[in-house]
Amino acid sequence: MTEYAGRLRLGVNIDHVATVRNARGGAYPDPLRAAEIAQEAGADGITAHLREDRRHITDADIEGLMQTLTVPLNFEMAATEEMQKIALRHRPHAVCIVPEKREEKTTEGGLEVAREENRLAHFIAPLREVGCRVSIFIAADPRQIEAAHRIGAQVIELHTGAYCDAHAEARLAERDEELEKLRAMSAFAHSLGLEVHAGHGLTYDTVQPVAACPEVVELNIGHFLVGEAIFRGLGPAIAEMRRLMDAARA
Image (cartoon, rainbow, N blue to C red; front, side, top):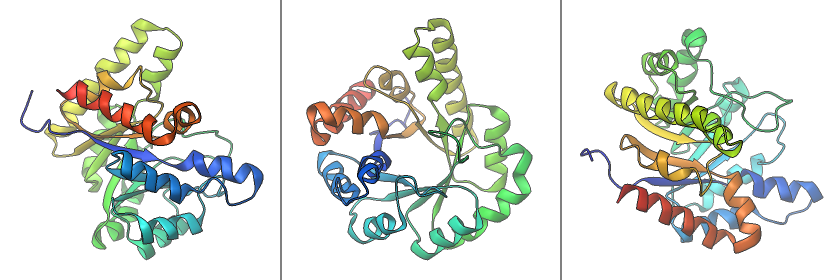
């Protein structure tokens, strides 16, 4: 294992705690409480996606997270003027630029960077200037990785959804192909000087092959952990994910 393969960080996405809360329109369950439990259970950071339609995380949630977190906040956002202003006001540790469509249930793919290099370069420049670490959520595609590097992103997060979907549907050849693509593109991005993260759809069954990629330094996992929390509690669910990640790196 290479010298850059240290302890793999775990970012816990709390969006779907807010989804459950918003289904009843009240204050329970509280995403901030989930963030506190995640910290105690071994999360290295908290991820929250403030969507244009505020379907789960709200502006008040971001305010609360910025005030209470003792681990870094990874603020997921679309590349819009509104979200840029919010990020510049709060100055979170990291911002992750993601694609966003009103009709999608969840983020369906990586951001198209190669066709929007000029716009995205100008969009992220002010965020970098105020000290935010800029990440771009992209497919495991060399064109997108090269473009992310050119526009000045410090981090890429590789979309693991295709790999996880192929595993869930027992399309084993496709699963292995997608995993190999993630491995190769992690190494390629690292060779360019980019920090490599990964996430989307990861479960106990799929996390270890990704966690074993030595160039990957952080995984962001949310929906599965919130779902598993129904059965075993959020703290134990995160602790088990942490155990599997650490075992993959041992």
